[in-house]
Image (cartoon, rainbow, N blue to C red; front, side):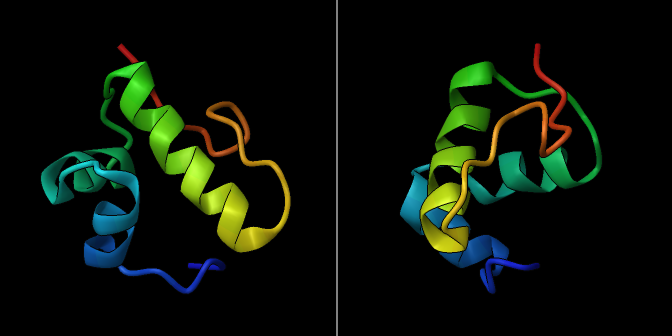
Length: 60
């Protein structure tokens, strides 16, 4: 939300599929490498480090 990205844009920028991002939004576990890709994009857009832990992303 704060990064002003929708699922489609976040998917395009991160290389993570829309269904996987939607799983993250529902607090379902995803692979750590995919979560890291999302955090990298969010960090770039927000201007501060976003980690898997700070984003509360559940990983497998």
